[in-house]
Length: 271
Image (cartoon, rainbow, N blue to C red; front, side):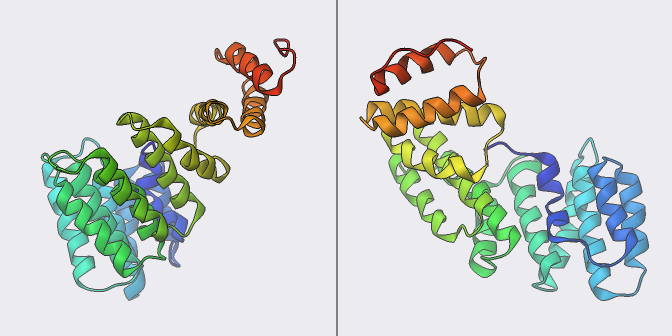
């Protein structure tokens, strides 16, 4: 799973900004990397007098501080103060979003990341607001910590088993897809039996969580693992999908050769 900065900083936009052009313009300005303009819009929205608008504007200010480059320790401290205030004063969408970004600060923005604190915040968000977009987005981030955090004495197999439990909390396609992708990647990373990755790749493939290169790799991995498992019909399906979508890929020859092998027919000509 690849981190997408625009997606992570602007996840709020997927929920939908509250009424008010300054809020809408503020999120749009962050999306365009015009952080100073975003700050002006959020400060104007905060003066509107509407409590819900003011809380979202406060969230916007905290997120904007994390988007302003270069991110300084002072900005991170101020963002943490703003976001903590939202968490401590409610349980609404801005408070949930603030907890998500506090976890992101602990995971990525501190000089010395505090993965234990990030995991605690993600778990609390999932436990208290499982259905929210923030909890659903937290699942993949928590999975990465559980799978790769140093200092954990758990074996790779134990890490994988514990992280697979998160699938029970994934209620949207994007969250399920991200979890299956990171689980499959972890199996390959830790050199666990590769066949263990096949169910995760099969589950992730139709959910659309891959970029173009990642999808090509996944299609070929599914085909190869299916072939090695003796699942010839399934292997042929994914070889053909790979070849159709990636006619000029360097793995094209090998895919055509293995397709002929599982189908028991002649090798397809090159495109």
